[in-house]
Image 1 (cartoon, rainbow, N blue to C red):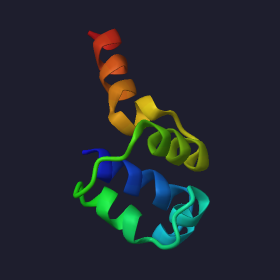
Image 2 (image 1 turned 30 degrees about the vertical axis):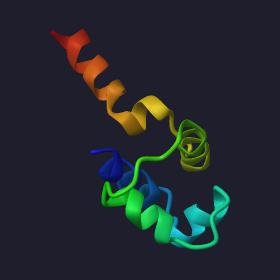
Image 3 (image 1 turned 45 degrees about the vertical axis):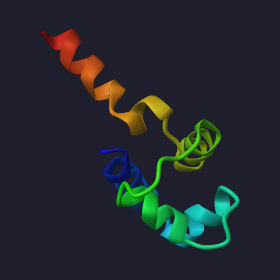
Length: 74
């Protein structure tokens, strides 16, 4: 699920995997590709960097904001 949220937000921001990878200090998009396929778990620092570049919160990437809004509506 984390990977899908990263992909969705990255595409919303109009960034390629390579562009996001470079923005967080990786030399290619391979790392981002693995994250988006849930083949690798990012460190806290990487997750914070991805959220910053994508203009969202870590909570959004983890799906916590959606759960909170759903609970508030109940």
